[in-house]
Image (cartoon, rainbow, N blue to C red; front, side):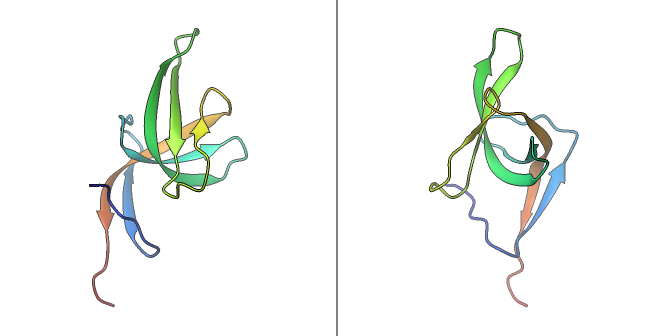
Length: 86
């Protein structure tokens, strides 16, 4: 079962972890804005660099592919918190 993220949730990100398939990550693309997506490994290119996709939580948006655009991983989500009552 996939975790459900809602506005107002808090995520804790570890910048020292390397992402694995299915991890949620915070990343930035070439335009320097931060994004929160699911990590999907796609293999290794001819230069030996890992190729991956970042899959959006909303399926109406396209995935980002590291072979097509510059993407840097800021960190891996290690905790997800939701306040039950305010």
